[in-house]
Length: 354
Image (spheres, rainbow, N blue to C red):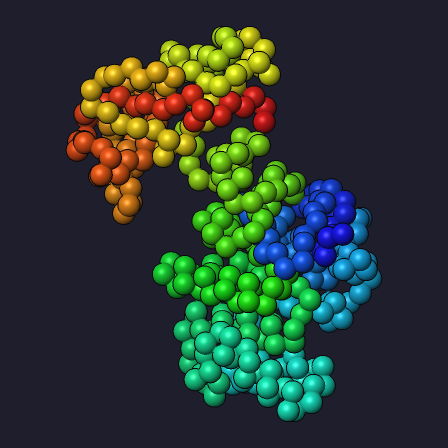
């Protein structure tokens, strides 16, 4: 039995469905990310778990017990908000101790627990400071320490890093993952940042318009998307719309694309072929490798991204993106004619209504 179970959960606002028939099982000790664009229902779902929003229908079970009737302050759930929500008139130590005082924890136990979580978030030297004397990253770590101090059964994080700059975000998400792993605490993490979700999670729940699009490991979500939305929302995917013309051929914009077996599609059916930029090789000279697609184009943009360089290539009036590395590709320049090569198994074919 799963530790946290959401069963057929529904929530509407002013007659508009925000979360629709949401069902999910979360195992104990897992870190699960709710990922999706703004307005997809991920924060509303989190708030229903916390008890800040009431369900229209459905149930939420924690360790086998229905927590829907239980008020938020009795659910034994820790929550970290985007805006930190620290008490400005309290020191760091007082902020962390607040929840323990509400639970009437003995002073010796309270002091010991505050010391433990300060060590855990590596901010022992800040205990006498006030929130305004800390950086944004330090404030968020203190907010995390406060949530963990009461030893909750579940930790909920609502866009906890979105207010921080890029370098601090990367460092702090690593800290969150380290602490979560050390404590083996069941965690639900809401974010719209795909890189953040893929790098930190055991399982990713991709949401769109109140629905679950796909649930899987980060690798499954990226390498085997089940819907067109997931394929294009997670990472970058080139899209070649066209029609099926054979067992393994799609015609798209006067291009003949070779794919894996298309027996699940009817001849003439409208489909889209999805190809990730990293699966495309760039060649200056034409060659015809076996079991691969080979199409001509002209370089329109060259964008440096550190380890890779992204090329925007005009192919029959359509833009195709290819990622190259200096070590594996000859030098290229703008307006250069090149050949793009990708194997048939790099092509994922989906019906256009997916």
